[in-house]
Length: 376
Image (cartoon, rainbow, N blue to C red; front, top):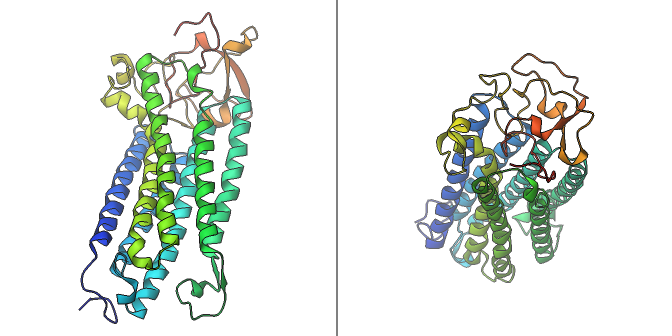
């Protein structure tokens, strides 16, 4: 007999075991990448931003999703619905209800983390406006997907106990609307920085690495699209528990792939330090101290989005051409420098690119290649 209350088929269904394996492996991989991200941010600078806490919280919800998938399998996922006891059926739907909420919150936090990272790294005013617009859209639609999942049936108990009087949203319309919203916002977030990428001053190998990272971002969009057929199968199913493993697997793959891709660009300091040839970094760049800097003229911020910068106080340039100038907002990149320089948090300064030391993608405001006389 089954260990689940009121009987039911013994053991775990093969498709259910596949769901558990997929959930554990992908969530475990995402957890390792998030851990490396925090290591890159904490060593040696010990600086974290809101985007880091967003991605960490997203992973916690990914872990909760994994637990939910396991409990769904324990209560009948992969088995024929009619072979389950009433207790198993209701428990399965209860954990399915909670897992969908965890999944939607996790995706919302991943997207928010990526946009906060964009805002921290790139300082162009027009680009920041676009980021804020997309962030507003993501927050609005995420609130819809989360709240519509929580209140899918009213009262809430009707989500797992159909004997309770009440009403529910149309299942197919709800699923496909949310899937379309997720895919649309995925593409918006991915396309947003593309106009900037060709202008970044990088070596060819670094540029290739950067484009590969964004190519992985397209993979997240592809996974979201590949998830749709499993939604169709589950929506048209007459045996819910038998046909649910497909959508379960694609959902955990989508969430955890998004977490991994959101972290990759923040791992550049570690790659530069331990595998400099991968990104085309020189030995000098790999050995250069992060954060404080051994030389007051060469110090660099510790990692992407650091709130503390090792740069000496920038000099205001009145004659720099607009094409060769970036804008550094000290509210984000300032704070106290290694040379104890204090700058007003509201100050905006103009910095001519040729006067700056080499800047690394993912570590400080990105220099753009708009001056035809400049040679990288």
